[in-house]
Length: 228
Image (cartoon, rainbow, N blue to C red; front, side, top):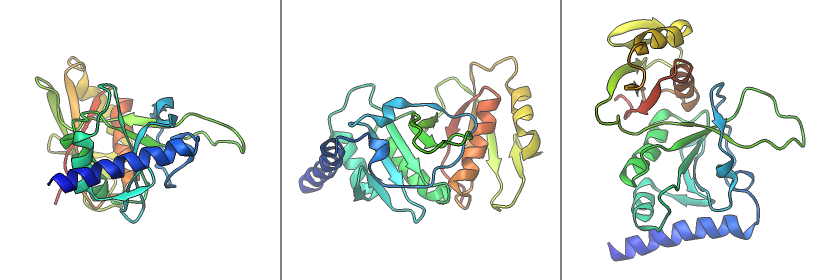
């Protein structure tokens, strides 16, 4: 176990050193992925810092910390023991095409490592002109419902082509999902959270669509393990 922890520390340190040595913002150097598009993501300029903790997931499901290929198991062990500030955030840069089941592995690492609100990096809907510099954007999600919260369960369909989801055991069309969530959140919005139980067969882009709908309703989001 001692050797495993040491190896994990070397992996994490190497990833950070590789970013710092390039003197390049983390989002401009590292593993390239096709980001999911979000209409509700907010700027997260800190993700461009040289010491930002960025976990990338490719379309094939490979996981990288910085530029180093890692497994969920050794990364989790390394993140637990690696020194960090209380305000350090974990940014997850997942490819839009990767299955949600692979993204959930990263969320499990976040939960086990004490990151209760990782940031899912996304692209904005506004086209970026050549040479234009814009800060990265992301969606903050929780990995567990806060104590005392009023949980609304949103369950996605297994079929990637389905345009329906289930909320509190009722079928709802995706086209009216934001309005439905807004109505459910009325009167107790501060304590209500949406627990998204998405099928692992969905793409990450489809899960981002669900998160966007929750954001549009002004409700916080918790991502549950994927359905079997």
